[in-house]
Length: 337
Image 1 (tube, one colour):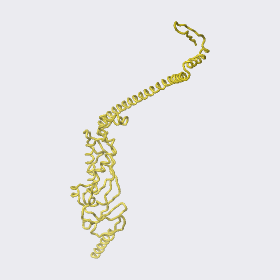
Image 2 (cartoon, helix red, strand yellow; image 1 turned 60 degrees about the vertical axis):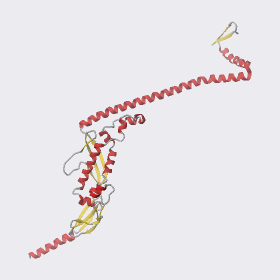
Image 3 (tube, helix red, strand yellow; image 1 turned 180 degrees about the horizontal axis):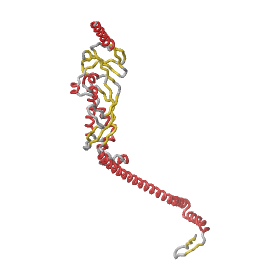
Image 4 (tube, helix red, strand yellow; image 1 turned 90 degrees about the vertical axis):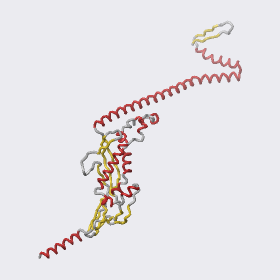
């Protein structure tokens, strides 16, 4: 009886182990790797070449190309085989994630020797072409990627310099760029430079972390560094510096605007005076030209007749006429209007 029960139990175990657990399904966002007695099934023993690795790293991270099973099923496996399923969907994680400790921010030291906190996220996904590195290369690939990312981030923060901040601080471009340069006088302080150039910092991190796929089997999709917060005392000092520099920038802009306004007004006043002078001179020039033509065509008698005829309306409007006689000259009449 006991032998019969043992045989029944053995058959049930074999049925469960071989037939029930032998079938598996791979979801659309998953890829599967099969190991037989602990050895992964390979397509090629040649290492996967990655252009983001240098020659030394290519020798260090020599991982074979594995045979992967795509979405679908049910698939069958033998009892001595094991299925390793990997989620290849894009995921996000905070920079502060660390399985060994709890932290609210990532501390980094700037080139000004100021300790600042960095917060943000990274988007990542498991590389389908580097599953050996992810499944068998290291024990905790995500932890390695986070450590690598943070070390590169701290190195970049410690050496970051705004590409245009230096020229703006020394004032060489103020005359060329006008008000836009004055608004950026807060540059030159490392934390301000970092805050103003977060997209540039994120692009640098993405470029430097392109090799994580070949190293650890995880590809960095995007770096999303959103906050750079110094300690409260440093933040208050920076606020005071920024306020002072902004005030200086505002004063420079106001003075430049006033100077430009005065120059414009002076130019317009000169133009108005020139036009008035031309308006006063134009009738005299026209009269002189008319008199010259009369004298040229009719002689002095015609010119004297023209002058006499022009006096007649004036004498008609005069209230009194004063005639004076000077020795050696003809009497002259002066009309008092």
